[in-house]
Length: 305
Ligand SMILES: [Fe+2]
Ligand SMILES: [Fe+2]
Figure (cartoon, rainbow, N blue to C red):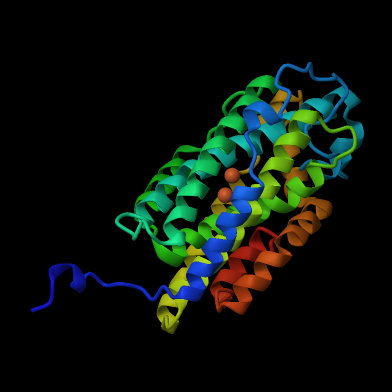
């Protein structure tokens, strides 16, 4: 008779899969950061410096942007980056719980287990780092609305396998492209440049891990499962992208919230930025059969496609 443990359905995790995690572990051992010592948290914030490169502001290029004073632009970009960081913390909380749940009783001798825990440790430092940056910039807690907050709660409790790692990949890819610009942004606060640099380096490993996990979990998956995953990931992307910048950031900059939202939504510049930052992600999804017609419709609505 089979031992009860043998009846637990197992997935195929090959030696080649584990090699990916081994390389990521080596990379993490070589280059990881402690934001507590890496960032100069006591340095004053130069009053004229932006929170993010103006091109990444949701209002850049609009009529409203042209009417704004330089001071308003500085305030707005600081609140925008703070809102994105707060959304980042929210998402990292979801991610840590999903990865921890996914690794429950996984073989601790494997590199996959050790890298997954390394990633959780990274995310824990990132969230503290973003929290400190927001406090330093005087940004309030921009929380997602009640519906989205509860949807996030359900997702982090229920999502597994390719759906969990798909959501993780979406959030990491979108943030990655912006942060590559922020880390070398001219006239951008050092605190944003520094936190972005740390995040870009460490997240590039997380993205490799997520892509590998998605490929592995989908190995041999049927059409229905792939379609469900594709749609679920697209819904996740929709929620993440639409929650990134809180409407109250416009109020903080002394703007009319209704007008700002309307102009940001209609901005061609903004749409082009979103499409550019999603190009790499869309290529990966297409390669893995995750860019179904239903998913593509959702991505088009938020201009990721
Ligand atoms: Fe992170
Ligand atoms: Fe990450």
